[in-house]
Amino acid sequence: MCRWLSGLPLRLAAASIMLFAPAVHPATSWTPEKNVEIVVTTGPSGAQDRTARTMQGIFQQRQIIGVPITVVNKPGGGGAIGLAYVNQHARDGHYLLTTSPTLLANHIVGVSNLTYTDVTPIAQLFSEYVGFAVRAESPLRSARELVEYIRKDPAAASASISTSAGNHNHIAIGLVMKAAGIDLKRLKVVVFKASGESVTAVLGGHVDFLATTASNLVPFAADGKMRVLAMAAPTRLGGPLANVPTWREIGIDAIGNNWRGVAGPKGMTSAQVAYWESTLNQLVATDEWKKDIDRNLWVGNYMRSAEAGTEYKRQYGELKDVLTEVGLAK
Image (cartoon, rainbow, N blue to C red; front, side, top):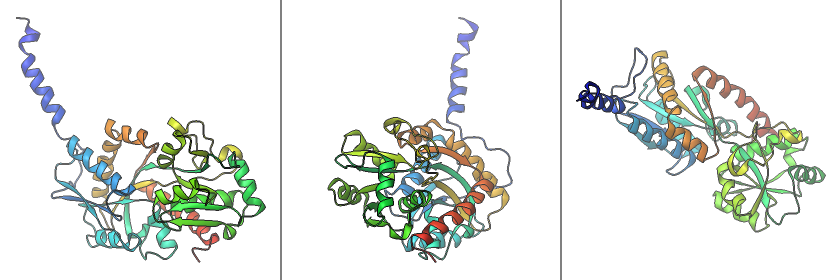
């Protein structure tokens, strides 16, 4: 028998061990020793919950973490309940928190007393940009026409959003209209409890246009029931929205970013942060994660702890300005 073939079983066994062995982390002075909790400040099935459960699934499938990992939902209080729960475990690296612009906005509008300074930034994972759409029968044929229509009388045009005033969809409208020189306090924004309701209102002609994230727009754009006018993104997205221009392309410099990130309790050590930076860096490099990003028309833009913290601070100031102008903050 060929010498190479005679050693084949041993080589296959070794390859199998390497395939299913836990991922190797760079040497750090801290690693988790017990169950890790990913805390979500909303209920099951929401965007932050889906992000957390995707993370959990890949961590387990790839054996990236050597301890059990669970998702814990702590909804209520505009995110304050989940934030308070995480900070009951200050300096403990076994607790993670999924984050989004609500971490900033809820503090600005007074819904929560806690904000980005009450957590330890670990990473930003991806961005989900907001699109603007009208029903197929709308006389507004382009983003430019929408802006001109609102300029004539801001109170005459109504916008549909879900699920709360001051959220990422509302912020995107404010940023776009502010960049267009429109008086934000005169805008008419109708808030619905669920995304399905906000879509139905536009399709029925009761509200003029819709602002929602890209993945929510795809089904309606594909079946021709809605016309997506523009994306509040830095560059065009791919897939079914590849032909949709950005607001920047028509001279309105505004980005509506519903980013998703990860933070930990206040007071985490540099060794704990370094471990999770390394772990999340492995997460975003997996094929499973990349496929999920592409499927949802998200944009992967991984940021490490220091950069994510700087971005929190920058966006807090930006969001405070626009939420004050729309009358939701003082």
